[in-house]
Image (cartoon, rainbow, N blue to C red; front, side, top):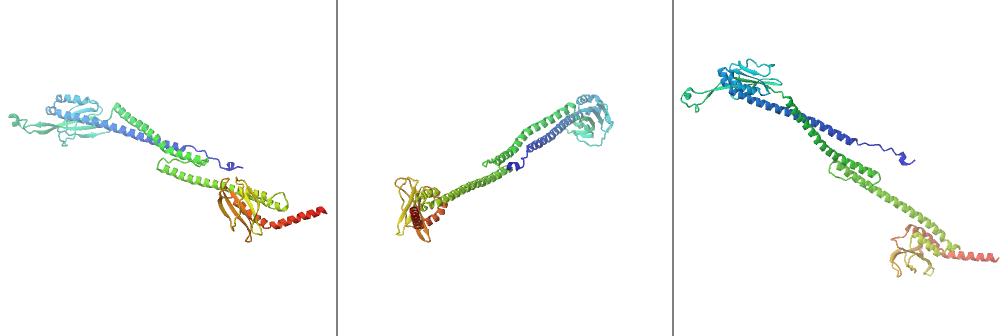
Amino acid sequence: MTNESNAAPKPRFRRRFTRRVFVIIIATLVLSGLMTGGLGFWLTYRTVQREKIARSTDLLLYLAANAEHGVVARDDTFVQPAFARLLRSKTISGVAIYGSDGAILFSRETRQTHSLPTRIDATKDLPMGATYILKARSTQRLMVAPIYSSIYDPEAITFGVQENSTATYRLRGYAVMRLVTRLEAGEIKDALMTGIILFLAVVLMGTLLAFAAATRITNPIQRIITGIEKFTGGDLTARIPVANHDEVGQIAFSFNRLAASLAQRMEELESWSKGLEQEVSKRTLEIKSSRKFLHSLISPLSGATSSWADIAQEIIEGAQAVYCALYHLKEDGNYSLLATHSRHQFKGTIQPRSITSEETELFAPENGPKFNVTWFPLTMKDHLEGQLVLGYETPSCSRGFVDQVLSALTITIANIHSFEKLSELGTRLRASNTAL
């Protein structure tokens, strides 16, 4: 069973986080819109109500300023124009004039459901032009303004210097007004429209801003998910762009650093695996070449068809060289060439050297390119038996193969005379057997 079948199934993920973000933002916007619309409605309601109270207060002061003669004469003819002007206002449901003792003198009302009081508290000492609330309910107010009359010095009037004299003021009575603070249906509708407009404006503008904000939140997360999926899908070069230096950017930076480290480890592991495969293949080839060489090594001495030239060719193939020469050191101290083989343009012979350890140098033939040459001494028990000369175009030859065949090659060349005598003896014995 494969690893894929044993692996746990990949869970199915949904974009619930994005939905949660949008739901939270939309819910916040709706609540903010409701609060803003309600606040706008309340502020509009209060503003219109205060404006009505301010206008009505001005009308009450106008009545108090024009009721002086009516109070003194106890005749409402003098205050009829002022009464008519006040009662034209929809916010005033009744007006009255009271004497200085607090008793009602005359009144006018547009609504009979709430009659004006017949007496008020006349103990308050109010300055001229001031007003105060006598009684207040949820939708009505009973407001009072003092009525003063100016009194000049009689002598100043007699001598015609009234303008230059100082007048004194005397409290003559009170002007009272019933004010309806409740807004009309049209005014409430206007205030409600203001609240609705504010609500819609907040929701619409907030939605646009929320969409932009949510996009800025979800897009980096989506980039992170895309980068992780690419990396887990096998693309080790996949990285997440770091757009901002915030928490999301820190996550992307940390992932990129982890991905780079994992990619480097994977490359190192892959490189090590390839190197191991190459090394195993190389060692396997060296072993095969060594076995083939050892098999061929005995052939020249056992009467088989192989020769020292074949052995030199086997050494070239196993050592991945381009030139090979085998020398045997004779008893007189001179070297005897056993075989040479070349895959190079150079077809000559490289002479042995008087050495006790291997030497390498760059050889430059006259009829071909340069190549490296190494002289290997074939020594057994501190006695030099011969030399192996290898030429190769690579920086080094197959050292493992060379190390394996040097010992066998040294033993074989050291016993070359014995092998030759045994071969000669075998040839004579075969000849004697043939004669007999």
